[in-house]
Length: 256
Length: 256
Image (cartoon, rainbow over all chains, first blue to last red; front, side, top):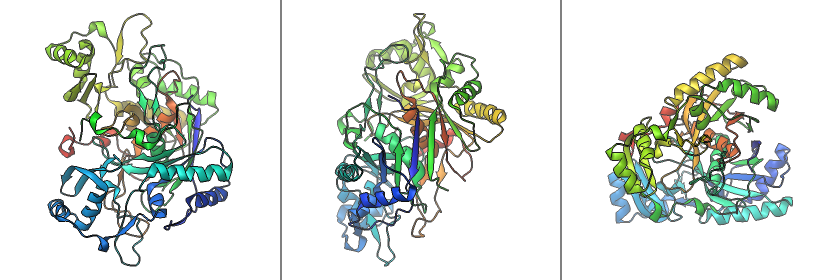
C-alpha cells in the first residue's frame, strides 16, 4: 500500500489569520488560486500557528501575572516570568530547565520546549506583547476542519496540524503532528511480512509525523508564510487514529 | 527560499541489492524505467539498508562470539547475545537497556535502538542468520554516490541516506538522515526576520531529517521495497553540511 509518488503544494496567498477566521474557507480560496481541486485522500497540513490564531489562542503578556514558581524559574533560566507563567499554565510538569531552555510536558502529553508558547509571528503591531498557545484540542480542531472541507468538496479528505519540535538527540527541529483527523497517525506493520516473508517484529511508523515533516519543508519558518500544504498521493489501510496515538505515555517513556 | 511545491517519486524496479552493487547505476536504471531525467537540485534519498548491503555490511551471526558484557546484557534484556555483541561492537555507550529494548549511542553519534543492527530484510535464504550494520561512514557514502550521480547526469544533485528511528517521547518511527551530501543538513534561520520583522531567536531546522521523513512515506517498511526516492523542488541557500551536523553533541544533550 505504498504510493509510487507524492506531490506537495503550498497553497498560495493564505492571508494573516485572525481570531474567528474560517480556515476551511481560506483553504478553499487558496486551492482556487492554485487551480487545484481536492481529490479523495488528499491531506491538508495546517501550521499550528494559523489554527491557534483562528481559535484566538493569543495571550496578551500584560494580562499574565506570574506566580511564585514562574518568578523563581524565570529568574533561574533567564526568561520573562510572564512567559514562564504562560508556559506553566499549559504544562503538567517541567521535564528540564536550564538557562535559556525550558522543556515541559504539555497537558496534551507532548514533551516540548516552552509548551509550544510562541512569541514569533504573533502580530504585535499595536505594541502589545503577545504569545500564542497551542490549540486547546488540536485533534478536535483537525476533525472540525476536516468535516468542513469534506462537506465543501464532497470527497473524503484528511487534516494534519503540524508544529516544529526539537528532538532529544538531534539538532534542529522537525515537523510533527499535533492534530490528526481522517488518517492513521500510526501505522503498525507488526505482523506484516518483510521482503523475505519473515514477520517484522517491531515496526510502527509515525505516519502522521512523517507527513507533518514533509509539509514542513514547504512551510518555511520565517517570513515565507506558507501555512497550508496539500499532500496528494498518500495511501493507507490502517484505521484512522488521532495525534494522541503518537504521544508516548509517561509509563512507556525512559526519558522524562 | 521556500518552494511552492515538491514532488517525490519512488524509483521503480530497484532490485535486491548485493555487496558490491553500483547504486548509482541502479538509480540510473530506475530513473530510466520511471521516465525521469535528473534536474539540478534533485535530491535522491536512499534507504540505509541498500547502502549497507552494497557495502557488504552484513554479518553472519555464527561468526560473532559474544563477550561477557553481551552475554550478561543479552540475558538481562532477553536478546540473542550474538546480536547484542554486534550492537555493542557498533556502540560507544549503552543509553538504556530494558527487556526487549536496547538504546545505545552509535559510534557515529546517533542515539538509536540496537545501534541500527537489523535482522529484517536481510537475505537469509541460505539458512544462515545475518544482521546488517549501518554503513561505516554514511556521509562518505552519500558523497561518493552524489559524485557518481552528478558526473553521470551532468547536473548538481544531492544525496540523503535515511533510516527509521524511534523517538524519545513519540510513538512510532520517523525517517531521519544518517548521511547527507550536497545540501545543508541543518538550516539556521536565526537572524532571519519573521513575518513582523522581528528576529527569530531560535529556529534551526533539521532540513535533511525532514527530507528523510518525507521520503520514508514512499519507501514502506515491509514488503514494498521502494528504497530510492527522488525529491524534486527543494530550494536552499544555506551552506552544505553533513548528517553529522544533525547529531546533538553529548555535551549539549540533556537526555542520555
